[in-house]
Amino acid sequence: MPRAVQFDRFGDVDVLHVTEVPEPIPGAGEVAVRVVVAGTNPGEIAIRTGAMDGIFPTTFPSGEGTDFAGVVAGVGADVTGFLVGDDVIGWSDGRSAQADYVVVPEDHLVVKRAELPWEVAGGLFVVAATATAAVRAVAPRPGETVVVSGAAGGVGGLAAQLAKRAGASVIGIASDSHADWLTSIGVIPVAYGDGMLDRIRAAAPDGVDAFIDTHGSGYVDAAIDLGVAPDRINTITDFPAVEQHHVRADGMSTASTSNVLAGVADLIADGSITLPIDATFPLDEVRDAYTELAKGHTRGKIVLTVSPT
Image (tube, rainbow, N blue to C red):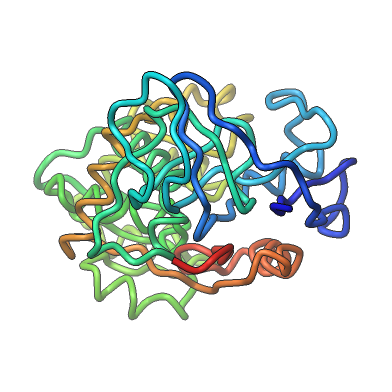
């Protein structure tokens, strides 16, 4: 029988298990996909521990995972855009992507180009939608300076590159170990920690115009200290700061469309931007994958390999 990652109660990684489930059948307007690669995301940790149950209520047993890439295994009535055997990228709204098979609406899929590696495709949707939303929120213009916290992560790295494509100069906050990679994508690296604001001011002598916070932990306060206007600050994680400073909090839900996914996928396939894959784990090692993700030092994405192509 097909496998799926599930959890039956809130908790640490030990609540995750791989179990046998019936093969899902697509209904009208739906597509069944045999998953090749599925992504992992920090928000899934918060959901699994119960930290976000007030925002994203959980019904047990719960599946896991949003991002995936795979091969169409079946189509329901009224599906016109995909055929069995098509390679696709997509997302699940039902926390069900970390499985051998997933069923989603047709409009949650785009065709996967051959130039896009499977590992990148399988971990793409959440970071693509979130980074796009964050960049749109601060609306960088040519000649402006944008700061991105967590700039080596999946969302931060894409946001930094998308802001650069808008014509901005981008300063990326990350650990020293990521400085060379940030430089390689045209981002000015600044290490976090003591003296960070002074280092940002030195890198941006004419000031900072916009700030994208993908990490939390006081970065909105730092943006305010740098003189950035609240409506040019966007955070995807620090919701108390949104209430306190009236900054923006646009995230994945504001850019969850197949057009956004296809657009970012095309940019990566063309070599215009990049999404590093920090590590891959087999589906059966899902606990190890989330343990590594929780350390908070990932460059790009951690993904799960589910089945061969």
